[in-house]
Image (tube, rainbow, N blue to C red; front, side, top):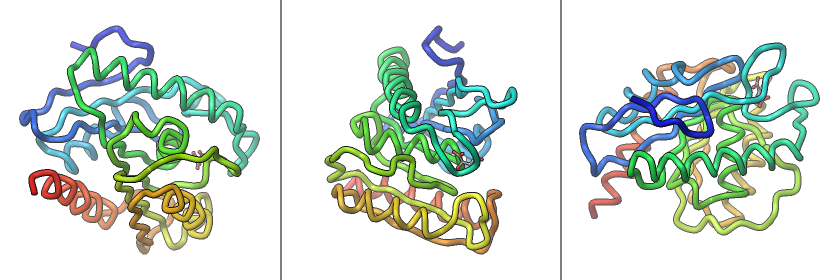
Length: 210
Ligand code: MLT
């Protein structure tokens, strides 16, 4: 049963309380069910928390408004990142979870990047698949101790590799430990994204137990 929180969401309990919970953030037009199989594949024993984005673009849920493809309404990015961080805090209380690892795809990766820059305490770490820079001029953030994996597609016309490289630099400048990998793909998810995400998530855990 899901708790009545500020976002419609899916929640699956984990089988191992020591496994980091995962926050799944879908792409444009997705919903709370889209990434559950991906989350389970990356984190088989973790709790999965998956909100449905609230902004509608021609009926398609998104996590923030955009003015056109690749041009974001940054006031809305700030507002929505705040709402999402508040939801994560509510969910942590309702489901008794620690700060989650975000797994975001496309628009979901972009809001996860905004969470890191604006409300870093909401996340333990992040896997950003086909991400872009969500804010041109973000406020200073302290991301020391946060690990981030960015996965770009070499042929992606929507989230270009150089834009993601800029995001990687911004996060590194704020102190995050960032890996930026480019896979032979376009905007869609591939098996290579899954392989790299699983390896990153496993490493987070092995680090914790050291
Ligand atoms: C966005 O946030 O607009 C994404 O990068 C692209 C998309 O969601 O289609």
